[in-house]
Image (cartoon, rainbow, N blue to C red; front, side):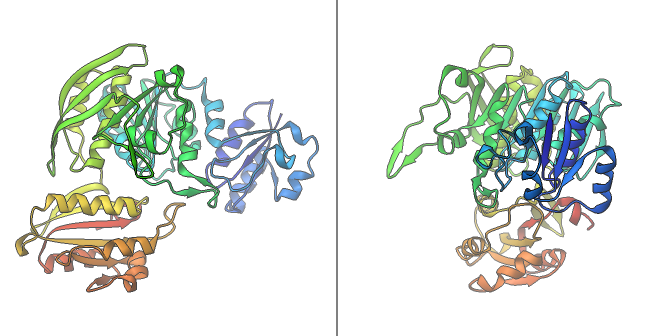
Length: 482
């Protein structure tokens, strides 16, 4: 069978090579975005992959209906039967599921969503560390073996193809007991438990032809799913509510959510399985009760239980991530004590709401390539809630900036500037780097600008800011040279 793998930018080369291992496949590749350098293209050709350079070449191929087209879910070009190129098309996610389905003999957890994916993965890493997990996240590929952490590779993407790479990189570790994979834009179908953290922003993909929520529905191909209630109710109200679907989904929520149709509020019509109650937020430690009702496990059991948890979760959106990790762990039938211990051991991840003390000020860092308006609003609201008053001895400073091109989705500058224009006058705003430079003329009132964010931090401290939130759009590893 002929296989056409589309898009070499997002792991297509790795998927093509994996198909090539089977003699039943004749493998073609189409470098949709023309990002593959000459050296890597020549290597793939030497290995036996045939390249087509444009759609005219594709249409000229004989026996077109024999093609299996493998294209990313965000592909802006259609390859379905409507253009007679192929009657069979699957996503990169589905291809990885097909290629790896008989190769991973241990339970798999996949985590997707708009926000919180990396945090949930690293909470699960702490909870499941006694199982010698293999972990793939935006921070790298890691194995924990007998309590010792081994970073195998850093700076890896979370495209579905990276699951193939992670499994290959871990081949020398014989005692892996579970896999935890962070996956962008949906799941591969490999997961025993898939997690949808949230759809905090339903951003456009495929050059505006699709939405992120469309891609992330792929997580429901997992054997079982832990899903955020708000996402299920507001984004996916038309998912099937038959018994088969309901039997595979467990729902978590921090607080009750109500759908709105026009001006009419609609009561929740789905039962919540994991809920946070009696929440006592703290900057370094939050304590709350977990109420579990009719939660379904992978072994067909039903849980009804409550227990107290203490962990790092200074705001509601962090707590939502914690509930995702708890829900998935309960579905895997991990003991309550192990869940509580793992969450006690969890510390913030550098860049994902990390806190440091510097020159008498607390600096709360949100350094993340996925920073968008939703994340900015949540970060500022979180810090404002921490500051009970904004007296001169407790002055709050906001520093914003960062880079372009760190993710496929760019940021809405006008909306960000409009939000900053609503800040209280007694909050000090400083802009930095490329993003800061681009919006500084949109800001009303007094605003500082420094090209270097380190200088911006020093300036905020010198201006008397005792609590500073640094919201910076970048990969943390790129700026961690301070």
